[in-house]
Amino acid sequence: MSSEYKLKTPLEKEDLARLKIGDKVLLSGKIYTARDAAHKRLVQLIKEGKELPIELEGQVIYYVGPTPPKPGQVIGSAGPTTSERMDPYAPLLLDHGLKAMIGKGQRSNAVVEAIKRNGAVYFAATGGVGALLAKAVKSSRIVAYEELGAEAIRELEVEDFPLIVAIDAQGRDLYVEGVSQYCLP
Amino acid sequence: MRELDVSEVIPQVKKLCIEANYYIGEDVLEKLEEALTQEESPVGKEILHQILTNHRMAAKEEMPACQDTGVAVIFVELGQDLHLKGGDLYSAINEGVRQGYKDGYLRKSLVDDPVIERKNTGDNTPAIIHLDIVPGDQLKITVAPKGGGSENMSEVRMLTPADGLEGVMNFVVDRVRRSGGNPCPPIIVGVGIGGNFEACALLAKKALMRDLRDRHPEPKWAQVEDELLLRINRLGIGPMGLGGRITALGVKILTLPCHIASMPVAVNIQCHAARHKTAVI
Ligand code: SF4
Image (cartoon, rainbow over all chains, first blue to last red; front, top):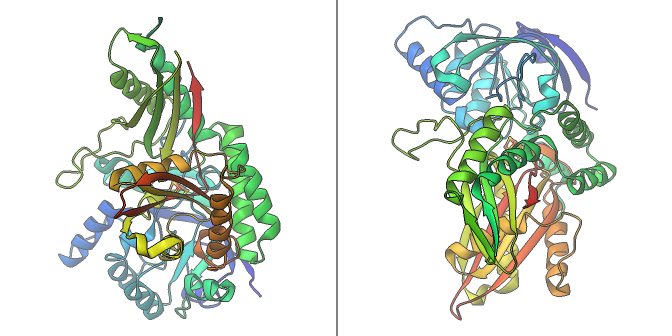
C-alpha cells in the first residue's frame, strides 16, 4: 500500500530512503526551478570546476516555466514540464548533491542509475494542473540567470506541494511498474 | 453584401485566447468526472481528482489551467458573402493573439527561427491560422491553444491500402503507447484518415474540435472510435503515465477520400487541458 508523507527541504538521505514508488508526498520549504537553458549553464559550470549560483546539496529542482503572475499573485500557473529534456544534464547534478527532481514523464536509464547511486528521488507532479500547483507556492524570487526570462532559476517557497514518488531511491520506476500492473493483454 | 471591419476581429480573438486558457470545456469536465468513477489505480484517482480541482479552480480564479498556454491555433470560417474591410484579416487575428496573451497573463511560447536562434517572439505570434470559405455572411473563429507536450507526441504515417483498418488501428494504439506519460494523459486522440500527407494532419487537428461527448455520425466509424478507445485504455498507461485504466477520454476520427494507392493516417494527441473556444461575428 502506498503511504503519504510530509517532507521539508533540504532533504536528507534518510527521508528519501523510506519513500516507495506510488507514495504521495506533500513537500514544503525552498525549491529551485530550472529548465533546459539553466541546466545547460549549471552543467557547464560544474565541468569547468566553477562555483554554482545555487547550492545543490540536499536540494530539489522543479522543471517548470510558469505563466506571468497576475497583479497580486505570487506566481502564475505553474505545472511541470516534460523531464526528458533534462535527462542529459540530471546525472551530473545528482552526483553533485541534488536530492530530488520534480517533473512529468519518464526518465532515461542514466537518470535512474544516478538516482540509485545517490539515494535521490524523482517526483511526478501532475501535468496541466498549473492553477492548483500555483496555490502551493508561497513566494518566488529569481536567484540566477534573470536574462533567461521564463527559464531563469527561481527559488520558490512551497507549502504542501502535492507530489507522487515516480522513481524511488532503490531505482524502482512507477512509469514501468504502474503501467505493467494495469496493462491488459 | 454584409461588411465587417477587421478591427472588430481583434477583441474577439483576444477574448477567445483568454477564455480558452481559463475555462476548460464542460464536455471535458464531464468525461473527467466519468473517468474518476472508472479509474482503479489509487495514484490515477488522485491525479484525476487534482485535474478536476485544477480546471474548476482555474475558471474560478480566472487563470490559465495549464502553464503551457501553447501556440494559438485558429480556425476561421469566412462566409463568402461577407466583405472584410479596413485592413488584413491575418494581421487582425495576430493582433488579437498579441493582446490576449499579454492582457490575459498567458505564457509566450513561440520562437522565431525553429532551429538556429530559437529566440522567443515575445508576444506569442504568429498564430497558426486555417481559413475555410463557407456559404453565408458570417465569420466564425475558433481559438485552440495547443501545448508542446502533447503536440510532440503526434505523427503522420503514410500507410498503404493493404494495411487495412487493422493497420490504421495498430498505428493509432502504438502511437499512444509510445507517448506514455509525456502528453499528460488522460488524453484525447484526434485521428485524420485519408486526404493526403498534409490534409490528414489538419483533419486530425479538426477532429479534436469535436464535442467530446458526440458520436461519429457514421456508425462504422463510431464503432472504430469505440474499439480504439477500448484498446488504448487496455495499455495501462493511466493518468500521467503512472499506471491505470484511463489513458484516453475519447478518440475522434475524421476522414476524407484519398488516392487509390494511398492511406495516410495522422494522429494528433491532445492532453486533458483540451482548450478551444468559438465565436461567431
Ligand atoms: S501536455 Fe497539455 S496539460 Fe500537459 S503541460 Fe502540455 S499543455 Fe499542459
